Each structure stands twice: as C-alpha cells, then as structure tokens.
Image (cartoon, rainbow, N blue to C red; front, side, top):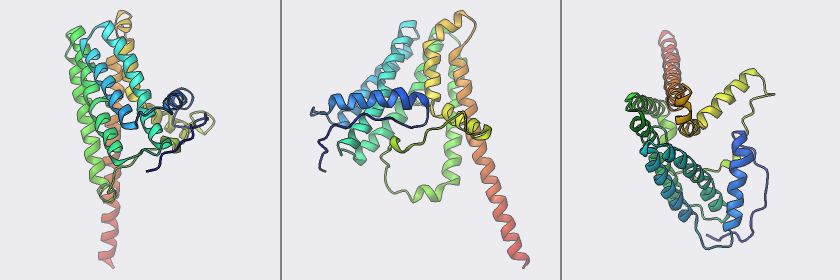
Amino acid sequence: MEQRNTKPERKRFRQEDVYTAYFHRPLALEIVRLLWNTNITANQITLFRVILNIISLILFAQGTSFGFIAGFFVFQVHEILDSVDGMYARYKNQTSKRGAFYEYLFDGLFSTSYGLLGLSIAYGAYHATGDMLYIWMFIIVTVAQSMDREFYLFFHRDKICQTKELHNIDHDSEEFAQIFGVGFKRGVRNFLYTVAVWKNELLLWGVLFFFWGKEHGIDFIFWAFVVHALILNGFWIKRAFEGYQKAKRIDEENFEERDR
C-alpha cells in the first residue's frame, strides 16, 4: 500500500463530545504531525500505548494515592495515543485488519470498566480500604456487560453474521452530540450517549479524586461504578424490551395470516 507523504494539516474536529473535539483529537493530530517524518509505524504506536496501559493498571492495583494519581495520568497518555495510532494509520495509508484486531483485542482486555481496567481499580480501592464492596460492584458491572452483549448478539445475530471483516474505526466521521440548542429530548439522549461513551473516564476521574473524596465523605469510585451499572443494565433491559416488542409484533402478524 502506497504511503501518503504530505503531513496532515491542522483542522477542527466535530465529534461525539466537547472534550474529544477540542482537546483529545487536536492533541492526537499534533502528535501525528510530530511523528510524520519518522519510520515509526501505527502498530508500533499501538504496542507502546498498550505498555502504558498495563503500567497504569499496575499502578491502580497498588491502592495508594501515588498509584491512583500516577495511573490516571499514564492512562490519559494511553488514551490520547489510542487516537494517534488510528489517525496515523489512516493518514499514512497504513490501515490493516491486524491493526483493527489489535485495537479490539487490547481495548477489550485492558481498557474497559468490565475488564482489567475495572478490576485493577476495584482491587486498588479494596486494597486501600479493605471494603469488598468495590469488588462486588465490579462483578455487577461485568455481569451487566455480559447480559448486554448476550442480548445484542441474540437480537442482532443476522446483522452480525453479515459482517465478515473487522472494521477500521474512523472517528472523523462521527457526529458532534450537542446537548444544548437541539431540543429537550435529543439533548437528553445526547447527554446520556456522552456519559455512556465516556463512562471509563468517569471511573478514571473517580480514581483521581478517590482519597480526597474519602476525606470529605464522597466515594467517587463507588459512585462511578454505580453509574456504570445503571448504564449497562439499562442497555440490556432496553434490548430485552425491544426484543419482546419485536417478537410480539411477529406473533401478531403470524396470527393475522392464520385467520385469513
């Protein structure tokens, strides 16, 4: 595949939320521009960010103030590089199915609230306080995610089976989810969508302010897990309800055909 030689121009991003559009993606683009004339590949960037990801999980699991704060900032660097590798690959025509596979694999393992990220934070909070509640909250979130995935696979099986290849995600095509000035119903929907998209960040910020919050009677990690659990349980309940409505509609149509 022929590589593109022209360094990408700076541009404005219109994506799913304010943080991404005005900070996260522009910073990622600056890093792409900085690396442009090097021999670094997109997959090498992915490998480096995974190493940072693992370091952050180890820091979280320490359950100390230093570990939580340092882990937070290391993970934020990883998050920015998570945008850099894909952007770099697209601009340099280095996209590949292996790259997409690495993205899905490593993010699923190390960067989700129901994966090793959530487990390391729950264990760190347990290690700091001796309270098993954090482990139980992690289990609830993991079960809720499993339920959501199970219902999604069940009710969208035909659509999934038609997908024969991994998708290289292009965030540049995403729409900006406005919360204000778009009507109440759409604003609420976009707000909930933004919270769902950035629920990992909610957990991470809970980590950053955990010890400060405990001194002031607020358990930020616990409440971040609660929000996660509500979102994920809401997802699978919604999918189950939609599945029931679809089954009911099909039964009614079949009964009508039998009566003819």
